[in-house]
Image (cartoon, rainbow, N blue to C red; front, side, top):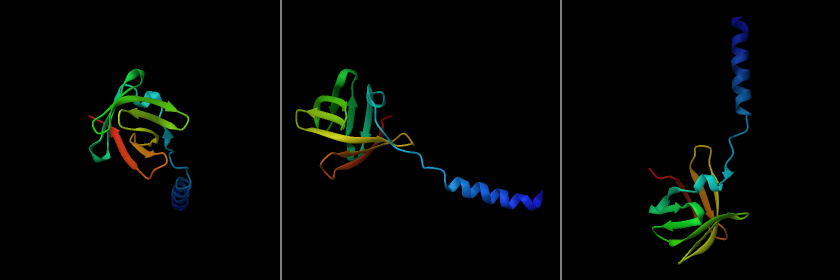
Length: 108
């Protein structure tokens, strides 16, 4: 039995290396509705039920999930962010058409 242990362990390690990595997924309304996200740079966004949006840096407005990403409309800005939920439960956002990127997580 011992002579098979090393090849068996090696096979398990090699096969584990070929498992597909966990994938990020686009956020859904359920991920954000009624939640507060703390983004990099001190930005805090509240995604209210019914599309109400509030951010300490960008102002008050609305949010919605669209085919292109999360549409944010405030009194100062109007943009779409491609936001992905990562396997560890955090978020990665890229504002479409820009090089602005940030990471976030649910605020405590």
